[in-house]
Length: 180
Picture 1: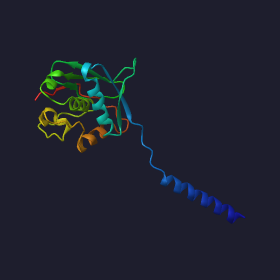
Picture 2: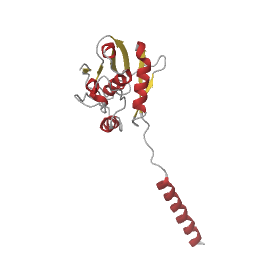
Picture 3: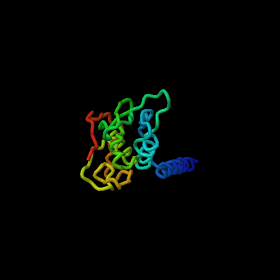
Picture 4: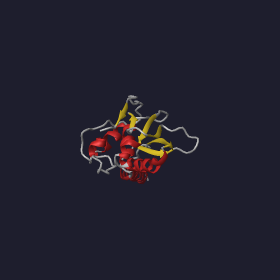
């Protein structure tokens, strides 16, 4: 009788151990950052596409349009200058600003690439100029014909590191202007 009970306990413990090793590891919930495009004027769809580019590329952070009445960490404002942004990484409850400059659009730069690039600054990425079109953070040095709005491997990895765990670092507060 004791042997049967011991056998059942060992079999149960083995099954439990097997089920625990077969189960996928739980990942921490991504950091959600809200953006406010209410002042983005004609660039709202470009901002949504830029946020979608980041959301499809990284796991540790999600960019979500702020619902009415919700304070956003990322404020986007259309203006007539060059695109520029406060360097992050911004954290929940923090605040950075992106100025979506019409001057770059007038010169022919792709609006989705501009939005994704400026959001990259909010996520803590500096400019990487000069650089090829394959580097989102090369900004205007990718050329007017460049439409790539996706971060490359090193850019994705940097943002994943910026939003891994519970770090509470904040951005520098520097404003980066993306004029060529």
